[in-house]
Image (cartoon, rainbow, N blue to C red; front, side, top):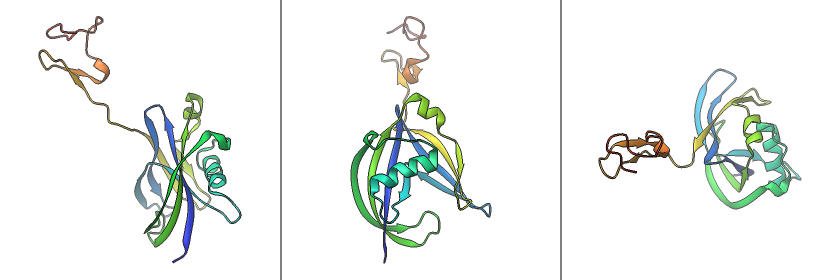
Length: 160
C-alpha cells in the first residue's frame, strides 16, 4: 500500500475550531464530513509545512507565514479516503493556526475545489457552553449567566 503524506491544520478562533461539515460531489451526492481540520496532500519536493501553508491559501484563502503555524505532532494510520472511500495509508503531520478576527471574517462558508467538489465549513465550539444554575434555587441562569439581572443576581431569588 502506497504511503500518502498529508498536512493537517486545525484552524482556531477564540474557543471555536473550523470544521469541514459536508462534501458535495459534482454529481450532487452529499457526504457528511465533520472533520475538525483541513488537510492537504504533500506534493513531490514539498515539505509538510509547505503543504500546510498552500492548503490554507487554496482552501480558505489565507496567506499565512510559516512561523504562525504551531507543530502539534504526527501519526500514521490506514483509513478510507474521504473522497473515494478507498483504503489508504496516511502519514499526517499536524499543525495548529490561531487566527485573528479579521481572518475569521475572510474564511468562506463554502468553497469549490478544482475537481468540482464543494466543501461546506462551519465553526464549532471546542467545548460546548453549558448553562449555569443558581446555587440557591437552581434556576437556569443561561450561558455566561445571561439571564441574571443588571446586578448579576438570580431573577427568582436574588442570589448573586
